Amino acid sequence: MPNQTTQIIRNKTIVSDDWTLLRIEKDQAPDSVSVLTGKVIVPLTVWLAQKAVLQDRPELGVWFASDERPEELTGDVQRFKVIAVDFPKFSDGRGYSIAYNLRARIGYTGELRAVGDILRDQMFYLQRVGFDAFAPRPDRSIEDALKGLNDFSVKYQTSWDEKNPLFRRVERAGASQ
Image (tube, rainbow, N blue to C red; front, side, top):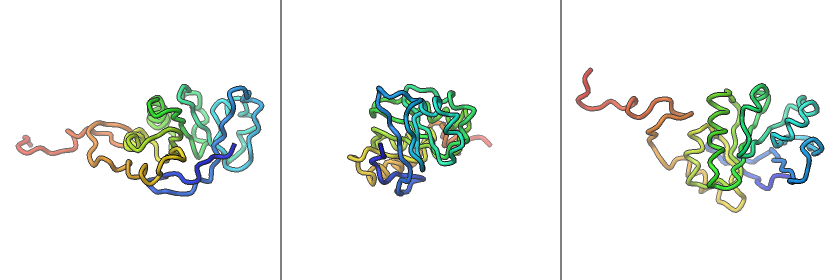
């Protein structure tokens, strides 16, 4: 099924999406799903089941369901130009951990895309754990979502995008030198 989203946010800019996100039905077996040609982001289960057939495709991405573990992709992570993480509902925060682990522990350097039920209020925090692309639901304003990336000007805690906490970055008046 082709992706309904025609625009995404990539590197803080709204751009056309030239990738198709493949979703499979619950009754479909991952090893029998037909993967279209072109730029396709397949479920992790399809990649794992059809790796021998799909591994030579240069324009292939993979996406994680919120209950899957990024370690399952450790040996193959750099072969993908795009890795997406699905947020089935905005209150499911497991995708944050998947993204952080892909960046910080597994070393993924390509496009990391949040897809699904993501809200403007989450955008700033999604980028903090390593997401650099976002595909909000089609019924949400992509322009409003883009504004959410800049909701805060100061980051207090460490994360993927800031390695030092605020107290180590700010020089205080009267501090001994």
